[in-house]
Amino acid sequence: MPVEPPPSRFEFPLPPADADDVIATGGDLEPGTLLAAYRAGLFPMRLEGELAWWSPVERGIVPLADEGGGVRVSRSLRRSIGRFEIRVDTTFEAVMRGCADPERPHGWIDDSFIDAYVRMYELGWAHSVETWRAGELVGGLYGLRIGRFFAGESMFHRATDASKVALWATAELLRLDGAELFDVQWTTSHLRSLGAIDVPRAEYLRRLRSAAVRT
Image (cartoon, rainbow, N blue to C red; front, side, top):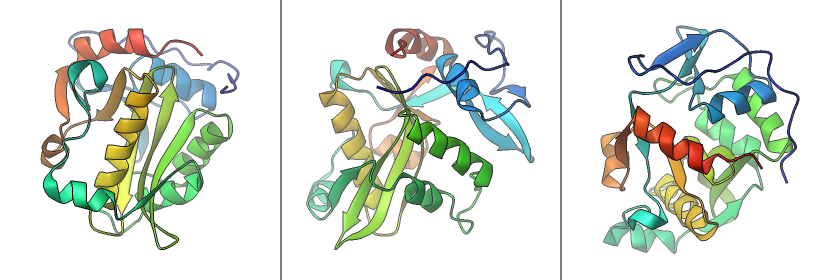
């Protein structure tokens, strides 16, 4: 069972209906703060160097079991699935550092984020789903699990389709474990091609209240 940390000294009220994607700035990345934020539908990213808390007006999710969802498996992806070994939580920090590669455009994962989410991993809240080939980590994703809710934060690949397979494996593992909500923050054309959809913030928050029950 995850360890509940001391509560945050900050409060995260639910975003007002007319709010933009950025709800607040400042605060910290303490475990209690992160949990309070995710339970309120927010996640942290830096905005021009400052810590900001985001709740997109249109939220990206991967539909799960009740909607006949999961990742859309093309013929080429189906072939790729068999080429990788899937592991869970064996090298969390390495996955984060893969996602934080400074050569990636628009990178925002710095050492403060790595330290914060490694602490969440040590407390049992953060998880990595990894793709391996020939004993080498070649892709993966990481995120936070709260009850029946999983917030996917970032993914990376060093081999063709390695991150797609990690996303597929994450969705399958969540479905098998009875999860209700797989959050991917924003959709992109790439994520939409894999089955991700946008839902309005109010709908996302409704789903979150059901899924992110206290464990």
